[in-house]
Length: 255
Image 1 (cartoon, rainbow, N blue to C red):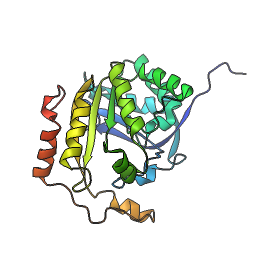
Image 2: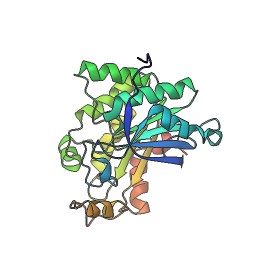
Image 3: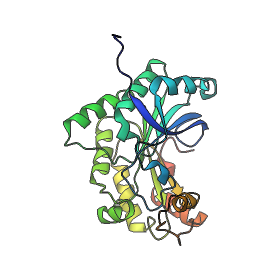
Image 4: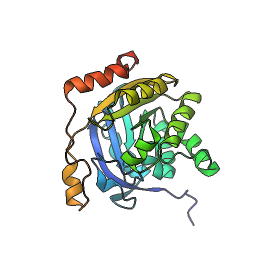
């Protein structure tokens, strides 16, 4: 019998070789399957189901990623996104540990939804994962708890608790917020979000992601009613106003 440790298999939605907006520098991006959130503006509803996509091991993905290492130079690396990658935390630990062994910068792109401080097993794994995670890109979709439940069909208290945990443990963060006119752009909510973000340590960048309709056809193809049929993208003026409220220029990684 072989003495090798059992490899964790990931359910992979897709791979991107030259990502430029999902972390610093040029990134190799791994999109994982599975998400419990049901955000009304989700542009990848096909990732909701966990057991979909292609089954791959950490070694297989790393072999593919390393082909592009010359393009990363000094500030690129690997980003794991989703779906929600924390639903496959065992794979993440194995993959990011392997990346660190090879001196590769790692970024986790997450909504924080699986975070559960009351679950010792999850927290032990999460703390292990954080040893090999250089940057967390955290989506803060809505600060008001009731609005968040309507927007994403999930609570947000644990998400903001995760942000505080990362702050308390010295982890570097980029914060993202999707801006949907008449849904996530109210001034009071943005000011409360700004106050919360400013209370955190380790935030290196804050980004506004303007709403777009590129994923609407996917909902239709899957036979799911799209809840924001009448929504439109924010104007440059609306986006700039939100950026000003969130003081995005105040953070050191702003570009």
